[in-house]
Length: 484
Image 1 (cartoon, rainbow, N blue to C red):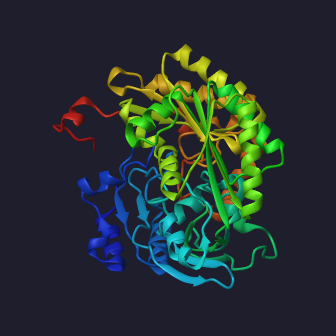
Image 2 (image 1 turned 180 degrees about the vertical axis):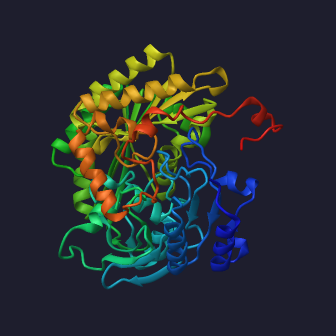
Image 3 (image 1 turned 90 degrees about the horizontal axis):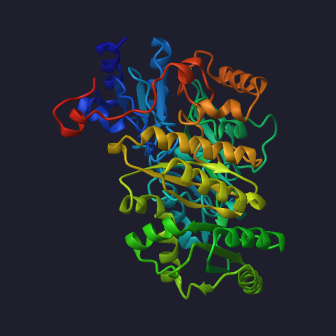
């Protein structure tokens, strides 16, 4: 049933009228995250400005049995912030204060709505940085990073979000406020902090986060290596790591992605390349210099026809702009694309890329590959045209790519999360006992199932009754009709 007007009135009493959204045109802004194929319109959007206000909202939801979904910047790519129809979206966008900078302890305490890159900006002048760097780091929020256990290009050396969160203030689904961890790197007791990070909003809402920051390295070198095939580039990745080198990042892009990035950002990637690697090394200057020489030799031995070192910070930034802007650049060459996220062992990269090429040909849809090659985290981009009825084919191809990852000994997701998009694929990787264990953990935090329901763990309704991803009706597209 639709939420009663009295519920919205109670929210306004807590937050103020301007921070409770109920008008249809306001709600439509929140009907999906970065995975636009799944959509639902919430009944109410609440915008708290402090932990106490989040707690008050959740208590109201618990009292009335109303499901809620926490949301950051909406950049997620698995439908993790997909609203529940007739439920509440709790947007943490107003909670963007840095609460404490403790350089002596190498810790920063932030509200959940702080943008990822703003943490580094706050400490860079003192010689520190925050390591996890999703491609959307200029806008994605730390709260969302915690929910998805986000990684980024530099997670190969420095680890994912879970390796950099030491403390959380959490509002549980019944409204209780708890603190997990603190400033210590390894707190005593059960690792509830590790359980919460990456739980995709199903265990509660993190409102304040204590982060570990690192010292800025003495030297950084960024190399670009161009190859005639993805096989050669994949072999170079394995050889670099096997040689005992641990780069800060190793990124790979294929010909299709290179073309899109060139058209959008003009990073001057080498002409004729079927694949390029971006290899970034950081650390003590002498070691970086030695490793860079070895990386160049390995790449040339594996067939690289050009190896280039960024001459300065401006050229390094341009090379990275092409890589980090690759998803957005796809709009230059395709009206629609579907982002997949799977993981394979590094040694299986050439094999899996060949399999993706075969699936692409079989389905008649192009696939652009751009990914964190160092840890085997693939981000194939399935290109399609929804106006030509290719949506189902794109989804089918993306699902088959996931199967190929699993068959190679990999996993369903590296950093984008499961959300609603891959929940029905969970039984392909986990047994019924595994899934039951996940559900027991979830119920221990949220016995009533109000926190981000329908995500991660599959349910019969989710996998059997939902007709599929949202498709905009032609009359909606023309602006003469609206979905209720």
